[in-house]
Image (cartoon, rainbow, N blue to C red; front, side, top):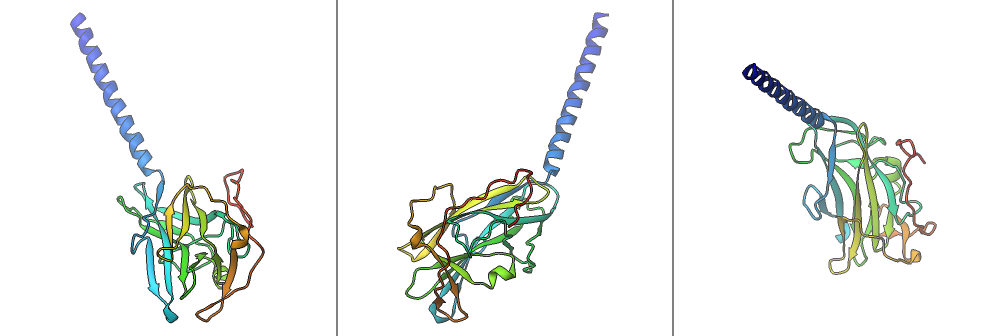
Length: 242
């Protein structure tokens, strides 16, 4: 009887362990199936995260980009990258909750994109900042929105330090990245990198927005002065609208 009891106990324990491993395996599989992503940025990483081009009149253009990596085993549909907050908030150049532009997509004022499986690498890239270097002048910046009505304004920011928090949203847990752009006097370019660095004390009068004409040189058209701004979280987890 004792021997039979030991056999029964061993069989039961073995079955329980097998069941435990099966449940654990299923949970891991379900976790991998959940839509999850990661935002990546490689400062100066040409061509995925930084693209440079020469312009007429000796000017240069640089595009600063983020990558979106799919961490799940299935594709994810209907995502958007939106501007959650700005430092500084500059009236006329910064639009809270405006979608940013996915590469390889037509500008459709919506900015939605799908994310295929990546196997450890980003499968979609989002343009965030456009930097123009004009002869004899410090570079100027603007944000690359997915709305043609905003892009045609050609509103660029004058200043030394800017930050933007980008939120990727959709039928997923939102993910965020904060990019800081700092003017480098040695190179006469902006250094852009992911950072939680606090905004330095600045004189708002040193910051302004200019609108470019169709020519090679900017036509200064100052707009209202800058003011610090940060968008609060929506209480219901939805989108903010302006």
